[in-house]
Image (cartoon, rainbow, N blue to C red; front, side, top):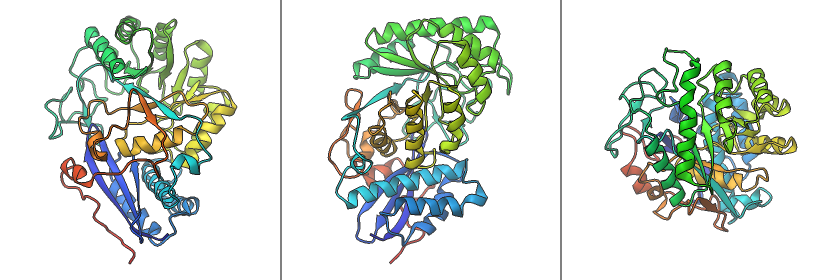
Length: 416
C-alpha cells in the first residue's frame, strides 16, 4: 500500500487544529492531527516528501526515517515532534483501515470498551481562541473573546474577565449535565496570576481565592464528579507549595503543571511535601523527557499529548513505564475530533488510564467536522469495530471553518 500524498488543512477553532491527510495509491485515506505551532504546515510538507512512495503499513520504519532526517533540526524535542506526531497518527489510521480493523485492535487490544473523557472547563469564563503564539483572537464563528485581542495569553492583563464563582459552579453543573463525571478548571485566573511580566510569584494572601474556586467547582459538580486543577507552569516553588496546601482536603484527581515540566527536582520536592497528586507532561516530548519524572516519582499522573509527544510508540512507552511504577496516565488533549478520536484509541489500550481530556466544549462545530455524529457521548468515547480511528473527516465542513489563507488538502508532493 504505497502512499500517494501527504496534505494538511488548518481549522481555526479555539486553537489551530492541523489535520493531516495521507492518501494511498488505492485511494484509502488515513487521518491524523498535529498540535498547533508556528510553521507547522511547512514542516509537515517537508517531512511528507519522505513519506510519499513508502508502504503505509511500515509505520515504525517510516517514523524512524523522519526522526533521523530531522535529527539536525531538533527531532528530540520541539515543533518537529508536533509534525511527526500528526504524520504518525495518520499512518496508524491508514494502516488500520487497510486491514479493516479498529486501531485499538492493532495495538494488542483494549483495556477499556469506552474511554472516559474529562471536560476542560477553563477558568469558568467565555470562549478564548488562541493562535500558535498564544495571541488572543476572535475567529469568524465566535461572537466574543474572553481577553484582550492580540495580547499573548501569559502577559499581565491579557485576561479581562474577573473570577465569578457562580459562573464556575454553573460551568461545572453544565458539564455534569452533559454526562461528564470528570472536570478540569484553571488555577491561573485573574487574581491568581503573577502581576509582573515574567514573574512566577504570588503573595500568600492571593492564594486565599483558590479554596473559594474549589468550593464553587464542588458546588456545581456535585458529589458524583471528580476534578483536576491546572496551573499552566505559571508559578515558582514557594507559590506552588502554597497552592498545593490550599488543595489539601479537596478530592483532586491531580494538580497539573504547578511548576515547569522539566523542573524535575522542584516537582520531586513539591511531591514530597504534599499529599496532593501532581501531574505534568503536555509539554514534554518523547519517553526520555518523562523518564526522570517517572523514576523519581515526581508526579502521580503523566499527561502526554498524543499530538506532540512524538508518535504513538512514544506515548505508549510513557504510559507503560508509568504503569510499572504505579503512576496513572491522563493524556492532555486540546485537539479537534480527529486528534481526539486518535488519542482515545491509544488511551483505550492503557490500563492505568484515568481520563482523556476534551478541550472543545466551547467549539460549536466540533462534531460537524466528522459528519455530525457525536464523538463523545455522556462523557465517553466508545471503542467500536469501525476501522482505523473510527471517524472520517467531512472535507466541506473543514472548508467552512478553515483558517483564512491556508490550504485545504492541496497536495504539495504526490506519487503517481
